[in-house]
Length: 309
Length: 309
Image (cartoon, rainbow over all chains, first blue to last red; front, top):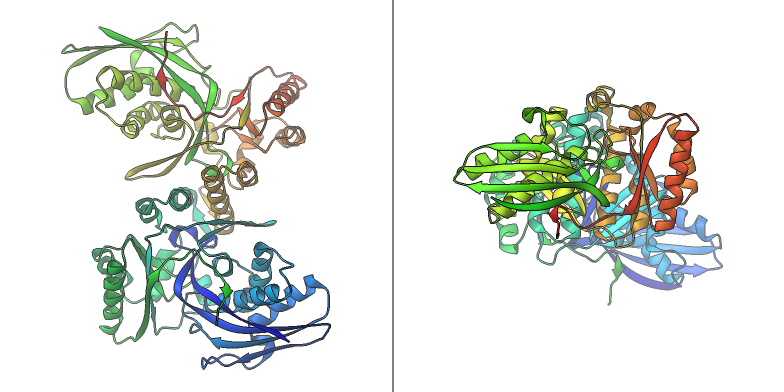
């Protein structure tokens, strides 16, 4: 059996105004999987060796539907063995499940001699997301596979656009010890929104995409507002407005909820600011008796890749 | 009195999904104004020598509020004389009023030695639009002044982003002899829209901006859908769906309503297709006993400019 170790990065979905259509790649945090394939054999096994608690049942693991989608499209018998070696804590809001699905399909595709395009791999990995949220979405698996910032223009047909991120561009993420299920986070959203609010939102989406395309860090910061979803979801995060004020006071370009929360992310144009921001974030939750994990680093242009060992 | 002749181009606002936030510049069609300034004098006059019927009352002409906004910001006495020499037919849906306002403020700024930035000029020219539609919007005056494709990220504060258009990129526009007032076109719109529809729309806005930024003509075409406004406004245009089928069959990348209508525009990647498209457009309305004017040409990177005479 041929084997490879694969790294896939953590990601932040939504990016404020880009609710359900955008995602960004984080450097320095992600999952590592060992993937093995044996052609002309049958079977699928997924072992968890990460030390992080995951469902023991194969069918409940996100990598299973992602790999099954790939194998169905490949349409030739292959045995696949996956060992999850290192894992972002689930529920972190930085694309834990997406990182595993992305690494799994990326590894199998490499070992089979790349029968599928990167965009096709995103469609396979999406099936892992469907297992958790009920909907196959690509705003985490997209950047986890392709790197940079990703826009999902539409799903029917599936149309994904990758843009590079500026070189000097940093993130700060805090994952507080609060549980917010994706289902709960969906349930608070309104079914209808005012047209005027929608127009404001798509003006900002346009600005955000233009900011990345033109590598204009200030425009990215000015555009990263969310008039639609943030007002409903910020209630899950204690004293969110106060946190935002403190984070912006440290020089953040923007702050918003990461994915469906409870994590919060901020962007900055230098690493020192990102470090100050995570310190402020940690203190905010500590002051309220809530523990947290923080992450700071560079926003990355690199998606899933082989780990040279 | 120093004088200059200024050309400002026709423009198409909205571009499908970019309702109220985007606009595009047309080559080969626009207004020509002769603008004169006399420092240390008072007064404003606007003469219509275009042969096109316009309100005789100075206060009812769109260039008046635009120029008054500029002069208020300049805060020194200047006499301004404007003669409108050539004019796009009003109500055409290709930014007739915007072209006049843009040319007027551009000319005065040139003659005064450029005290204002191009973005500031957009804010002045917007005041002309407010006279007609009740709201100061920039999706026609923006491209009429700056050229290319323009995104208005937001109005508070005013934030406008210009992107270049691809070199080989053509438009076809038809202006049927139907009257649809901007007020009427606003009145049919819903006040609230489904969140799922809004998400689809901002995915397309992101795709459209990315398409222009990456000069990806196919992505521009794939993104130029409008799930929100077109279904309500297409009722003003006889057999709109049939027209769209015929236009797309001629190789158009996309077709949509120009501004608030009744004009319709299409985009194409070669001029021959744009010519076939205007022929099909003209026939569509002629078959229904409706006269029309058509325009075909290059999408332009050049906004308002001095006419070398």
